[in-house]
Image 1 (cartoon, one colour):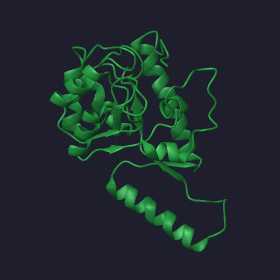
Image 2 (cartoon, helix red, strand yellow; image 1 turned 90 degrees about the horizontal axis):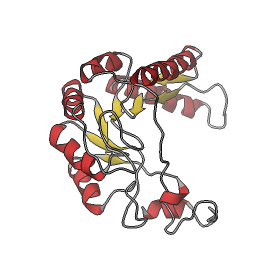
Image 3 (cartoon, one colour; image 1 turned 135 degrees about the vertical axis):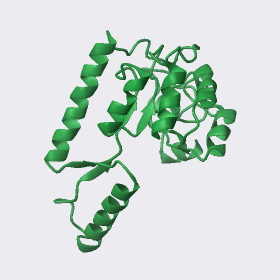
Length: 218
């Protein structure tokens, strides 16, 4: 199951749309709904606020503290050049997945076999220098291994499952899983049902047999 083309018409369009999304998050923050977490001290302060609130409001569901979030980017197309990454870090970016579906500006993604583009290695080196975490999700196999050659910082996968259980390029092989573990990376589960249940047929298979136990299997 591959979406053939999710992309922007131009880098300028990607840049503009990312700023629109960022402006929306900032508006929610100004209204007190969410809070951007930019470093460990901010995370610890935020968690302490929630723990204190939970202790005082065991049964309440309203008037909670803001929801905390770490700003990430899925697909680096909005970054005009590798040396512009610092600007996005100033805006709060802390996690970056260089690609999404298909061929991207910096790397090949889901559904293609191409690797890093000529802009990929400089971006990854700049990520290492600035301390931006690398999200391995959506890399093609070739991009996955090439990225590890150019990036020295912390790695993670925000939403990925096991290829051994549901064969597809979008999933990680056991070898890929092991190398992330070896680098002390965290892997989050993907809840797309086709990625959880073997033999999924779009438009035919139902999600009735997909449970949290299925997620645990991965």
